[in-house]
Image 1 (cartoon, helix red, strand yellow):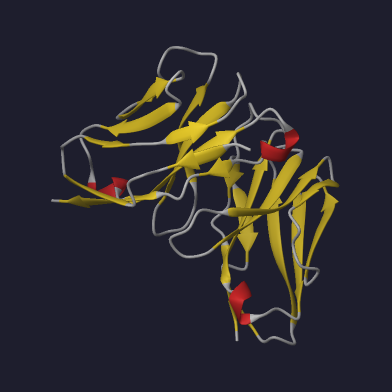
Image 2: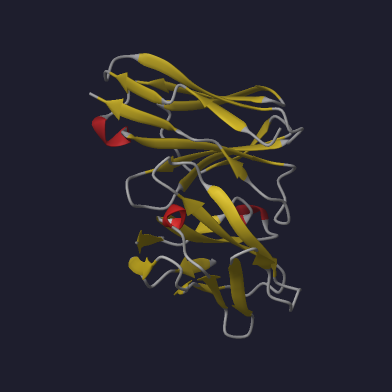
Length: 114
Length: 116
């Protein structure tokens, strides 16, 4: 199993809503990542979890709240988002948070904020 | 800080022909990994090929090969016998042994179109 599964695939939410994105992997990976990607642009790193602990937070606004409840699961909680937050949100995982490990990506959640 | 530059925003190729996508990077580190990722319209980022800086031999994966020039800090991707399914956005990425850059540094991408 070399899959990173993200749900939902599409999400439309209002600016006052609270929603969550979910990412799951069963490859035994201990590093998990959230990226934000705008159309025709490269992914931008948001958060890194290593062994279920937050290792990197790239100065992401507090309306994005990550959570890693166990080694297989990564959530991104969304609250009071702005229209400019509309983007593709990609989750990735790697065996560990190390440069010589390959990152596997999920298919992403296409988020639209209205 | 490390940077990755892809100077070709768009490229096109005919089926069965060969195309080369260019990537240069800037770093002061001696060991690192370089990657090419493919992102088709289905959105999933798929690893195409990887290269460790300490390995002089260029990596190959079937129709995909790289020309890694460490001194020139160049890492180009050659796609041979192009197929319609190769149409996608291709990202060159750098992975540093230092924590701040370990989570992949991407270039801006090259959109490849393939015509029959």
